[in-house]
Image 1 (tube, rainbow, N blue to C red):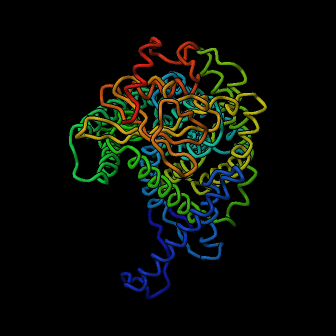
Image 2: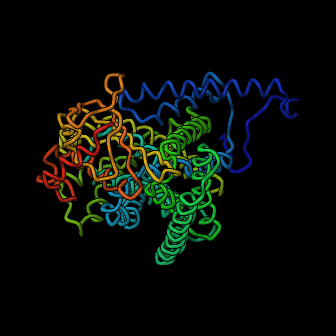
Length: 534
């Protein structure tokens, strides 16, 4: 086998061990730029076909590798693991920043049980199948069982946001993918260590301790970081996104150095910051999204380089067998047993079972036994790689169809408003940008009928590329973009009112979609008069 534990490298021709020259550096930069452009263009292909983008990026890496047109012989598993960990930190931070607390909060109990007890069930069943059906020894079987029991944050975040699932199920799947990396990493490291494997109760205690430390540090760093960013006025708006990502990385490093779960710490810190109404949030969210894409592209291309396609042939059938056990037995059993206390409907359990997407995380974790020198670690890596590619190719594109068959799609529900907030610190106010989607019940509502709280007003409407100052009698339409100015004390109530009208129309309060009491007609008329532009 060409791959070795920690001593691999990119091979060079004899006499080329000298440092890179400027010309070689320029060539390397050109190659990286072309790869990025191809990867960005491939996103559109993957979005149209329903395939997760990771398969496209892995394909780019394989094409550049030893059996491809690039003929790059890369076998440094240790470097791949380090870069993979760093990329996963960025991906978890981006996912946490985009998670809505109102969706994550009700999903927390289910997600925590699925990412701990559910992982244990999945590892046990998958390892048993790998041992008896494929013939692997128990150490190798346990490693594979642990590696593939982690759902991938990047795959879940990219695929689920394009599938119109109910927010509760989306919250469970996203929270589970953010939480289950931590216990799985602990299990893989324990099974890959030299000597006998710790007893089950010692592993449970270690996992519980590391999760507790990581959670405490993540919550503390996220809260302190949010407090600091809201209290300190930085001289440039572009510094806020950098500060947010630096705080997220600090949470990971602090958690790992304290012998806790750094992955859990970075995810929780990011969730807190993402729901803290930080200054210049749209810029921060865009910056994090761009970094997340960069991390995915770099990690997947590197993993594609690490694999040698002609070595995968002997491990295709073992991978398919292990994948069948995981997909058809282990994952459904873990979902069923984890959700027993919550009386989750069967059709929702079926969807959660099918939506347990794997991606780059299992492949990155498969480098741990390679670096640790575990016997036949090459076979473990190859089985995991084939399993991820084959079953992602099956599950990703079919997930929307499964959701429709189970009648769990949200396509018929009213689309939520897209609201972004830009703070006006000196004026103690906020400028809300409100996009009215196609299925919003705000269509047909007059500006005066919005009944915004005193201190908030619609100042501009953009329709078909033309902007104008609205009157109280102006009728809002689908596709309109509104600029709403709100003072700091009423910012939250104004957003709640806008969302209530978007879901319930002009009769939102009477239909129970708004939390604020409906104003009397006279007061509403007076308020509309006060908001009339001069």
